[in-house]
Length: 590
Image (tube, rainbow, N blue to C red; front, side, top):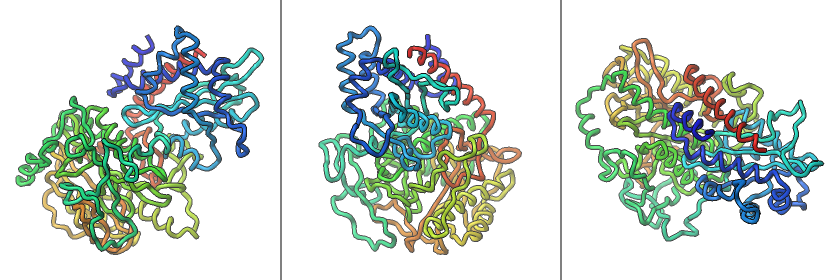
């Protein structure tokens, strides 16, 4: 009955939730099994590190894929013989580990992700604090769903007078129940480590440099007069799959370039130089594609932490989009080899996800496009990697628009300049969007963007621009972001397009192209940042189709501009509350 109830809720949310449904049920059954003397003797005590002197926290993390957990689920049922249950617990105990949370944001991010909501962070931190008390233990079952996101089912246990079981909570506890779930999270940095690497290749995955605009691969790094500190790293090549690319399920309706790499329909449409005026029905189809793109970029941003590779982030993006029965538009677009663009530091755009681990202090841009129902939804965001970029468990509530603005020490001049660039780039996007309405000339966006960039002593890249979007990935109109451009056309209701100003730190706007034929970098090696939305012009202004929502990670510099549709979010909040009630029903087993 509970599963039927959850399925009904999922249909209302318009998301394929069967995977989460099965995973939640299996995880809660595992918690029930842990809340017993056999759970204590077989799972908690063997995993406990008695030699640890750094913490008194007795919290244990078991992390696995939803497929693995569901395969084990039959072992957790009440009808399963006791010997089999003990055997399953021993197997799980071998893969579980005792973990701790310090007061630093980095320790939390490493385990659960970047920009996690205050509510989820508070509950998870409280679980760890409670586990430090005498005779108390905490368990976190973190499940990596097929869509790339993670959901954690957590329990607090104690060794009481009546034996081992769920913990009783005091009236002033921050936890409303001894067991709860947290979603959405990201897989831990350990879980995102690559199984195949250039140093340790497998038969299925080889590692090569991209060359010739994606048409070929090479063992050796191509020669180039590098300007910045960044260098290309090798990319994965799936030996048994078409063109070495990630597999797309047969059920997904693919873009026209899936096999040929040529968007012939798009090329013909560009020649006409006429912008489509979408009907309301067409706009709603586009909105669905944009919602998938938004979910995908949120999934990826949560996973951005030092040590995580762009390859792993690309896999999350690919899995999320395909799980929603959509196609990742960049894949094989003019031979582009990956499912999203990931541009680090001096890369302006079109960075190819590779195996270089992200480092503390990097900035990384994630550019995602999803093709669903015949329409493309395009957006991107730039994020600071490491401490200082995450608003974390701030003093403001989510409803207040996130957290307080990140403080930067005056002595940390590099970080201060980086944050200035990020804020400038986002304000440039906001300035361009502010004049979207019927009869505004597309060339006027460049005036607005350039004014903001000049205020921050930054420059606007002229080589690349925003574009029309809808049935085609890129089409008329062109939307340049620099002052004095000669773009033709004016906005009309139903015009769908992107604004995506690329902003360089300093006055050098020019770019160079790496030998791979895709990666555009700043000419002087300076940092570059970008933010993008897909929007449609309406009779009285603009409808931003890729807007952020309450599940979007809270990351700098989203402190002044929170583009959330309140009515839409009220519906989502109701669904989330009903899912919470359902998990509480599961909790009654404890």
